[in-house]
Length: 389
Image (cartoon, rainbow, N blue to C red):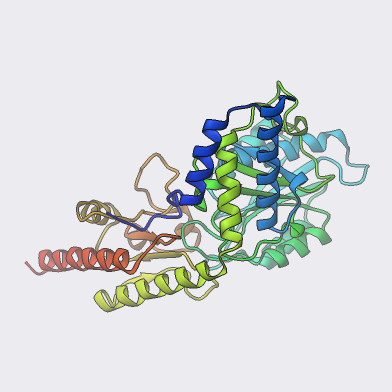
């Protein structure tokens, strides 16, 4: 089995597995005041600090969630509802405008639509991107000048499908100048590029994208940023997210963040593998198109298409050879659909239907790449033979 789908889920790191296993045998509720409860609380707080350290934040800013989807929901709904405590005449005031890029993850785009239904005074606008998948900064500048009331801007640190890195420092500057709030989805990027939480007001993370366990994520919130809880019923996490914390998941998350923080050579190794894959891809299929190559990209991500080889056909053939890639985002119930990201980049639908994503991580090897490219070569030759017949 050759796994090149780390942007969907990166396999559990051994260190995280050990942490999860140890905590499962520990027991104890972090809210209890007895010895086991205090030991559980110490694990939560230690993980909080380690995760915050990965993105230049502080432990007190971390709220644990069930994953990035909940984190994005909490940030958007929580910011909009929390801003109602003020009004347009006060500093900040309620949020009346929400800007999202056309390439955001579906958990942001779908939440933005629902938010506008729930808060009719919030106008949602989609920000365009360039053909390379980078946010149009001038478009953002103009958009922030229009309309009244406070704005909330949602921009991912790097795209989960193409790996294209967004200019967050510039986005942050424009948002600050306009008095807007900024949400950064850092899920695909954390640990692969430098992330500075000081540039934003809300930041989302997911454990299983960095070799931690599934089912746990985090939202970092700047002190003073509006946030109303969306899950109520308990006083956990300063009353901002009710429910007993997922102790084993949090422990594994903290360890994964710590390992990633202390593994500077991992990025270079993964970047070398990605480059080797793309070199080999061009050798076997010179007509292959690799998306986003004119912009900075994550070391881990290669989004490409071989014209004539549809993603659906390719994924079946690859899987039969034991090679695991994906087609665009994997958060769509296993469906193979044309990517909204590539559509926003103005890629023709026929070519976009051929788009595949190979993503690399901590346990990727040259053998994975050789298996993937050999399988793709076999599929390409089969297509060419059929066309020539």
